[in-house]
Amino acid sequence: MSSMRLLTWGTGLALVCLACSSNDASEPPAPSPGGNGGSGPTSSSSSSGGGFLDAGVDAGNPALLDCGISATVANPWIQTEFDGVPDFTGDFTKRTAVELPRRIHDASVTQGKYGFDLKDEVEPIDPRVALVNVNIHDLTSPDAYGASFQTAGAPGAKIYLSNVYLEPNWPAWVSYDTTNYDGMVLDNSEEIFAEDLTVKNWNADTAADVKSKHAQFVCLRTEGNGHRTLRFWNVGPHYLVKSSVNNGTGALVWMKTCTGARIHIYDSTFNGAPQLPADKISCEDGGEPEIVYLTTDPRTTGEMHPMFSSR
Image: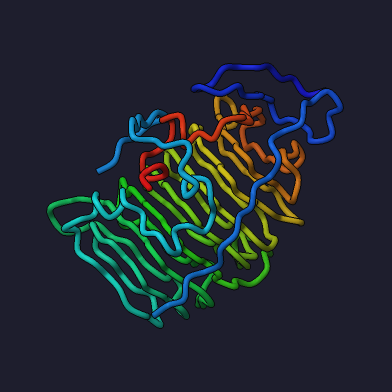
């Protein structure tokens, strides 16, 4: 039987389990799964850490609780924080380099090995990027590597996603030597905050190769199978809120270091189940991460990034 204990986390009561099995009869029921609607858009300075105080949170705001809202209501925090940052928009049919800082919006990429190749090479160094209403799909690669976007050329990248649809349609996973493809690969990044993100038909190594210290996903939806859906290289804490993570053949979550790692989960499903099955967690160090099932939406407690409560 998996070990667990009750903790008070923020303002809500949370169930903590160490790699809990979803069929443990002693587990109390998790919150019922929420909707994760929305589809891919058509083409046509933040804090770091686990606590983000936002005194302006309105827990009664319906927009705060709905998936798909970013398709019709722009994110005010991104608009404010990226005011004056150069825009980048358009439809592209090859690997496209983008110098940061940048607000990439109403844009699409297809056919490249990497859709957007994010770089921060020109002074002054400012590795911030927002992707808003972006569609990256049907990529091609002459070798074993590729992703919808990558951050290897932008050390310390701080990434903000709102209404982003990734469908690279990579070949099915075989091995690192032949199919080391990802939905997105975040080498050298500092943190990622994403709302209404869909990663579909990634098929190969991972839907999201997250080397960021902190990752917070609200209304993340992954579809399709492959080697590992979410790949976390750092202990976090990471957040999955009102999300749907799926993979019928491989791990749902892989972590380089599970010992001391923590994932906070609220109102999410994993292959349709309300809890993350222990046999769908892969730990390179052989440890056990803490999986914290929250009973209060963390967007209303001040513990998540303010972009998620700015509407």
